[in-house]
Length: 420
Image 1 (cartoon, helix red, strand yellow):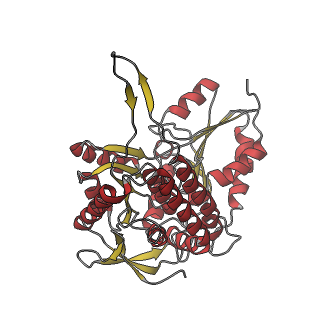
Image 2 (spheres, one colour):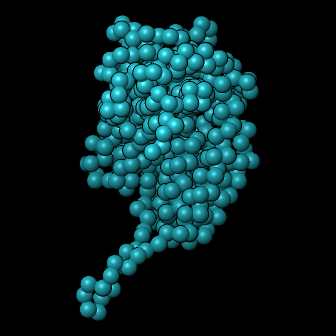
Image 3 (cartoon, helix red, strand yellow):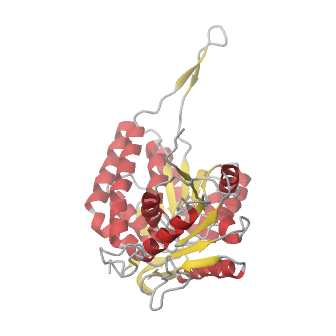
């Protein structure tokens, strides 16, 4: 167990309790047990963090030279690398992902921070040409000010880094609201950053989206808000942000099609789907969850995919050999089960899985479902769990139509030996 302490919020370079004193347990979805206590932040706390970030922006960060910003970010990357084992365990316990998976994420995260540190030194203005005699037109890039980052629960540390990194590199300050289910790696990042950055440059406020997240979006001093989450949340945030005409960056849901033509390499495809469809227990907006297969390859694909999926090792997230852990919560497990149950009632066939795993934890079996109806809910909507659907298309036109016949974009793949 990584820790059982009570975590505070990080505001203006100091650690603070919620303004109400309210806390809630942080639950490990693999065991159902509390692993820490977390502050339930309020709108007042969000405003305090924004005020601290605005102060730091105006007094310190706005005119900190890019080379100094970059140097601090490189120090943060080094600190995260040094703390990798602890961060991996915190994230494994919060999300429910196997420790081997969360550990593999850390080098990628720190490499991203180093990338953003490099970008801090190469921002350029451009000449816009001579339009009036005696005048020169130029474009000068300046930071916006305070940025708000609302993070999801599937990759909490990675998404926090993606929101903090570009903001700081460009000279902005940051207020991060981690998902209430998975707050500890963002808080640990703040701990590591405390001795590197000036107070107020990085702030982390825990709590619920309906309070803390909503207030970050509505606060007029937040000039940009970046959100990773589901589409319904994104719509609400975009509408709320319009009140203060702030910039909004949304990365929302996905329903990635995998178009498989009859000449595809089935063995390689199945190997890829075993990973890409079920990594992080399918809780990935780019998960390869919607297979659209040609008429002649369909049967062979299904025949090989089912035993491959059944071979996925599900279990104790601290076991290095385990490939898949639980869903992030029992609520999410029940949501996934609901999709599969309704699909079966509508005529879909579950070839493997389709049930929760008995015992403690929010576990659900890796599942393969064949579907004939392109308009079926399980085809059209994001399940966000270890569920891959397989459909049979008749011709190329139908495959392309089906691949695009959902409201989501984001990711896709095409499998064929014919690249012409």
